[in-house]
Image (tube, one colour):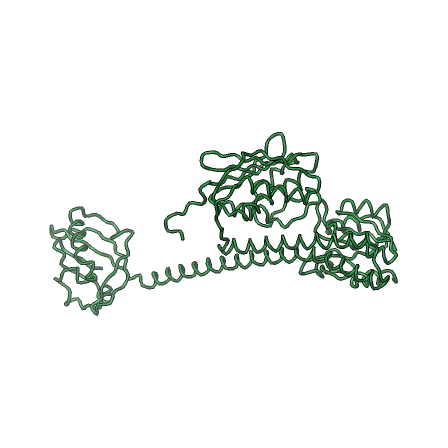
Length: 362
Length: 117
C-alpha cells in the first residue's frame, strides 16, 4: 500500500510495498510516486494522478490497461492497483493498494499458449482427418474400376490360353468393358488431381478469348457421342466471346451435361441455354429428371458428396465440387435451381471480361 | 453350384458372372440388398458374393435381414474395396472375403473352397 498527497508525494508505505518495490521506507517517503512507475509511463501518470485528485473516488486504476511497477533495481513487473481517496487532517490523500500479479500474468500467458497450441493441434488433426478421408475414398473409388479392368483382361487371356481362339462377341464385350473402365479411371484420376490442386490453391487457369457458344457445342457433341442416341437441345446466340480457360470451361459443361444425362433418363429432355446478361454470360443446363431431394440440396457441391438412392449412377462425388471451384476461379458462380414442376437447372454465370484481378493478387 | 452376386457396379457384376458361368456355376445377380433378399428367397443360392456399399440397402443390412429369415443360409463372401476388408467381413459374420481389386484366380479359389464343402 502506498499513500500519496495531492502533489503526488509519497507520505506513507507499508512493509509489503517496501518488499514489492525493493525500497526502504526512508528512501521513498517524500519522493514523487512516479519513482515507482517505469520511466516511459511517468508523464502520463502525472496527468492521470492530477485528474484523479479532481474527481477522487474508489476505483481500479487503468481499467483495460496493463500496468507495470518499477523496482528500485530498475526491473519492471505487472501490477494491479486500486485507488481510494482518504482525508487526513483536512488534507486529501490517495491510497493505492498495489498487487504484484507477475505469477498470475504468467499463468494467463501459459493458459493462452496452451489454448493456441490446442487449437493448432486440432486444426492439424482436422487436416489429417480430411486427408485420410480423401485417400480412403480415392482408394476405394479407384479399386472398383481396377477390379473389373483386371478381371476382364484375365478372362480374355484365359480364353485364349484354353481355347486358342476367342469368341468375337465375347472378345468385343471384354474390350468394351476394359475401354469403359479405363476411361472411368482416367476421369477419376483427373478429378482427384483437380481436387488436390484446388485444396493446395494451385488450380490455375489459362485464359484466352474464346467463343462460349462453340465450346458449348463441342461439349454437347462429346456428351451425345458417349450417350448414344441421347440428344441435347441448344438455345444460344451465334456466338458469345468471353475471357475464359476454354478447356476448364468445357470440363464444367461436360460435367453438368453428364449429370443431366445420367440423372434424367429419356424421354426427359436436356437443354443448354446461353444468354448474355449485364456483362455476364449465363449458361443454364436443364433436365427433366426427378430433381434432388430437398435434404441433399445444400450439400451437392461438397466434395465426395453423393446423392444415394438415385438409381444405378456411378461417380465419386467430385464433379460438381470441381466445377464450382473452376467457375469461381473465373470470377463467376455456379448454382442449382429446382423448379416446382420438376427437374434440375444448373446455372453458370461468368463475367465476359474474365476474372477481375484485385489489387494485391498476383 | 448356385451363386448369388450382390453388386451395384455393373462391370464387376458382369465379369464375376461371366467368370463363374464359365466354370459351370449357375449365377443370379442383384444390384442392391433389397433385390438380393427377394432373389435369395426365390433362387435359394449355395453361395452369396456380397458387395458392401450399395444404394437402397447396403451389405450390412442385407446380411442381417438374410440371416433373420428362416434357413438354411448360404455362406457369404464379402467383396470390398475397403482398407479394413477383414473387419468388414467380421461385421457381417461372412465366411470369407475378397479384397478389391481381386484377380480371377482369387475368385475361383474362394468359390472352389465352398463347392467342395
